[in-house]
Image 1 (cartoon, helix red, strand yellow):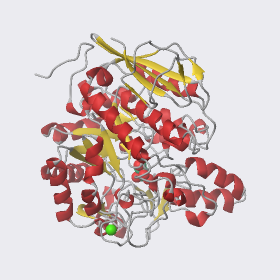
Image 2 (cartoon, rainbow, N blue to C red; image 1 turned 180 degrees about the vertical axis):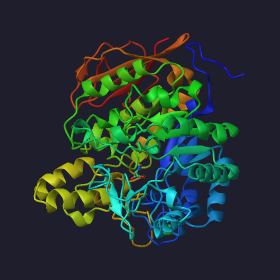
Image 3 (spheres, helix red, strand yellow; image 1 turned 135 degrees about the vertical axis):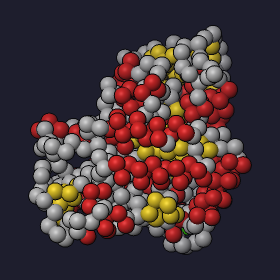
Length: 541
Ligand code: NOJ
Ligand code: CA
């Protein structure tokens, strides 16, 4: 029998877990070829373990031509040669288990690489048995666009068009074909039988397509993900996947719910529906994006409103996640904090405090515990991401945007901010060779060693969260939703309650504070007002 909390949540290990995301290419290079690898993760496991996290999410480690850095898989059962061998994977998994942690891997099955054997066969002829593994049409059927820009249809050699909601090197699988679903379930079992503890599922709501292939509605042309995430059979297929595979193992799943509204979230995660355990909801990380997806200034009021709405949208049958960053987002201190030398450390600690005291399973992205920042990109050749490169062609190449405006936007939104190799020391310390992608030039100042105080703060918060179920399952109450500078909320469970107070600004502020000593904070003492970027956690009951 599973235990239930006083406020009605069924207790689960993954609800109480803290997850740390590793983007292996940029984590640590063990053999000097300039590319982070699985042995590199193994060699730095103490760094992850020392934070006290429970689960590692490993971004794709599979064989891939790397058009999209591994999110284009050529062979689901093979480790990418640049990352090592299957033996390295098995050794890493064993070491993670020995350290008392779990491992989830990335399941990227909305699409494959165009170099996957299935697609090689599929494109070879209309009569090929694998033709129907992908979505083909004899004419360009509609105006769908790729998330990475340009049309979502590309012509194959025989003149037919195939669908790719991302890059043309990422053809979409045809989930309506039962043989495709069976292949996916088989490859999931392959990894689960090795002992992995679940999956992060890449753009999983996109798997079902509306085969009438209507044009995009006018109001969603700039945000087609809200169309792609609403295919007719997405819930049927996820339920089937749960029944056929997931329910047979004690694992966790978290779906990347790009294009899913808060209102539609319960359909994916309500535990009575038996689809996914959790999803990543994008509402919070979209506060600084305008209707066209470009950067816009955000306010704390809008940001806080997301969590109030989320709390209203999800009942105790639905479990949220909390994340502010990953490999698709800029660095948190630069985005939600203050990356100036004066406030970088304090604001990094404040954001850690928020991440680790909110209800929902928290996800930390590699390097945030070092206080890493965005960099200032000034040249298109400094970027790696194909999304940015496509945008350069489309926006600057066509004369729509000046290069200056382009860089101003990319310096706020680019995914490359998060993808630079980790600076382990003031010398860089990522590789003894040439890194595959330049480190942030500020690595001499900002690195794992200089970020030690931030790291220790994460570790303290994680220990507190693990000791206090109220910080995991507590009822959420924003006590100052209209305060423009302070984020203050209570988390209450049975007889226990915490108050978390965060000054999201570089100005001191008066705020009605308990006269007890906080159990955790990012300053040494606790006067009666809040200093810039001050974060405090009080136990109030
Ligand atoms: C979401 C992943 O997080 C992102 O990195 C990738 O480019 C797209 N899905 C396509 O797989
Ligand atoms: Ca390497």
